[in-house]
Structure formats: C-alpha cells, structure tokens
Amino acid sequence: MTALLDVLTAGYVGDRVAGTVTLVRDGALVAVIDPGMVADRDRILGPLTDLQVAPGDVTDVVFSHHHPDHTVNAALFPNARIHDFQATYVDDQWIDREFEDDVALLSLSVRLMLTPGHTPQDVTTLVDTDRGLVACTHLWWSAGGPLEDPYAEDAATLRASRQRVLDLKPTLIVPGHGAPFVPLPSTPL
Image (cartoon, rainbow, N blue to C red):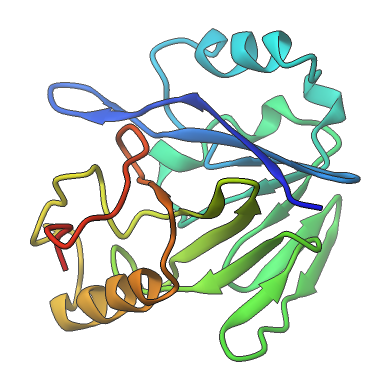
C-alpha cells in the first residue's frame, strides 16, 4: 500500500510569498506539510474540503523548517501532532525524535529525512506513492532552484543534501515555493 499525496496550494516568491502546502494520507496518518503563509486560508482549507478532509481530521503537521512562511497556519489543525527536525509536539509534550541514519518513520509510506541546507534544521518528507517516491522539501524553492539559496548558511551542505535527495531517485519533488516538478539532469545542485 502507498500513500496519497495532494498539493493543496503551490507557493511562490516575489513581491509576496506563499509556501507550498501538501496533504499526505497513509492509513491513519493524515498529514499537512508546511501549512504556512498563503494569500487566504481558503487556499488550504478549500482544497481540503474538496478532498473531504476536515481540519480536525488532520493527525499530523510537518514543518520542513521553522520560517513563518511554512508554519503560521499550523493552528488550523487542532488535533494534529507537530513534527520537525528534533521532536514531535503533542499538547504540552515535547517528544524527542529518534533518527536512524538521518531518517524517521511517520507511517509505512511516509518518513522524514534530515536534509540541512536552506536552514541547518531542514527535514524532507519522503512519501511512497503509486507514482513513485515524492520528496517534499525546501532544498529547492521551485523547479529553477535557486542555484544559490540566499538564506543558506553553507552552500556545500545545501548541495550535499540536494544530491542525497536526488540519489533516492524521486519521481517528483514538491518544492518550498512552487509547483511540483520532475527532477531532471538540469535540476540545480
């Protein structure tokens, strides 16, 4: 069995900024990845309604990193556990996360991988779907990169994490601020 993945809204960067927000369903797991800044909250809630998922049905929220453009709408999901690079947060509990070889399982088809780059605390959500492996990540803002992330503290670390994700042979990358894209040999490292 594989997970279902739907992009709720594709983000953008320019005079305004919005993050790409993704829904993943795998058995009991109903996860929203990066519920951050959008022009209107209906850009998240409308597609959820279309998919017959109520905000209270969401069991998990994943932050690829802690910038507000990827986190500010987490409170839309009152029953969700929150996941980041170091822990799971449930109500008043801080549950340290254990990574084995930089990977932690959320379900049979969904796992988190430590991928520092945009920030030192980045995680990529890897989702096994019927179309192959999908990587939801902020290692790329969009299909075009940028080649050099202006916020990355260490360009070599960013390139190494990008290569690590590409070595997994994902069939699709869901970037931090753009539409999903198929990785190509020209995908920026």
